[in-house]
Image (tube, rainbow over all chains, first blue to last red; front, side):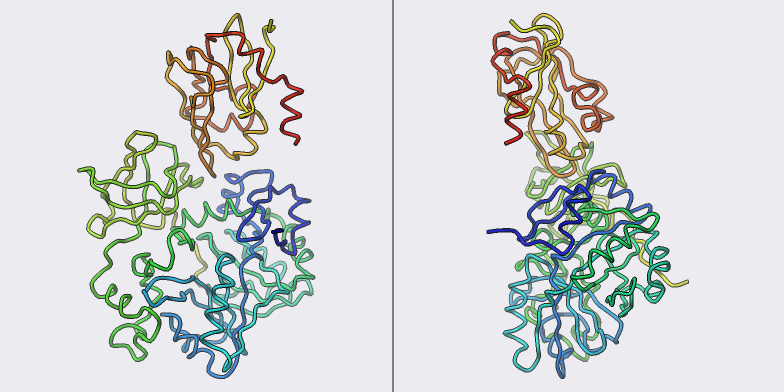
Length: 370
Length: 127
């Protein structure tokens, strides 16, 4: 099967990207500077990522918010126009079918879903929401992410209408004469914007942003190491259909109104398990690990306690360039999950001690209004 | 017979240069470091270890993945590159120079001549 290309494919090749397959798309994993430099550039200046492989889905029609609320544990009914939230499609078993952003654009809800879950999400949404509502994939738009401490300064120069957006807000605005839909959000732990742009204008908008001082392209490799340092979950790694949002440390996404005793308590798939775990605590929890030494501990490694008993498993493991040390995310038994504890993995026959630390590894620097 | 200074290659993207009689310097190729991306840690063999040709002898950890470096020939590890402990990125910057891995006293010097020469290696990665 041939790989799909994003509207920026030719630009990636011109920029010298190394392309890899990701969720059926040819995507840039890195550009010539490499993952570490791209990562550090994002933390110190600003990087442009092509995330057009992600699914942009429009849900519209009367009562869309309350209908979508029956599929997610977030508060969508009270989501004001111009605001967005991070939430999940949950399954009957209380696991996560996908994690997604839901934006209220005014006339409709705009969902941004994982590339790998696009088709499954669509089937799920259509089965639950149609024919009363319209569920449409927006195929003709690219999605760019501008991330880093200089992102706001860049946005002030290219699109003043978006530069003052509060975190997790969005606006339709013209960028270089192109009608874009821009949100203040991202997946790096830094301040930044995600820019939905018509496919035909994507190269022009990307070129304009890359032409700004301080902006460099960054690939999926840096995107992964940035989100890992920021302690952000990646679907298929920290999240899947058997893992609850409570285990993943995402209880903060479930507002009081959807919890036991709330005005619209429960009413989403898997609510019994999720509300029970909110009350009693989950059996296992997501934790951060700082392995000793410089070698990363990779996904899939088993973890053991001091007695050598199985204690958990690594879900993402890599190298954190900001910390100049390896970092990992892992699920461990609830009783062991407190920061300050220690576990070990066995890598190539040797025990590798790992300190349990609180997340994120690198503090978030999302935009806060003065 | 091989000449001092001559370099040969394996299909697994290691290079070995004959430094002096019977002693080869081993590293990974530019192609290999490029494929691996930023290297963050290298586990080198212990000095004195006796290895067989093709045996895993070092581990290379990049930001993306872990890879093995195999012994291009049988022999005894004489020395490892002390620079790589703190500066594994030297392998990315200078894989044929400062980024060397270890020196090997060959048990069977004929194994060197049987490795690929530069032209054969370049042809193999051009495929």
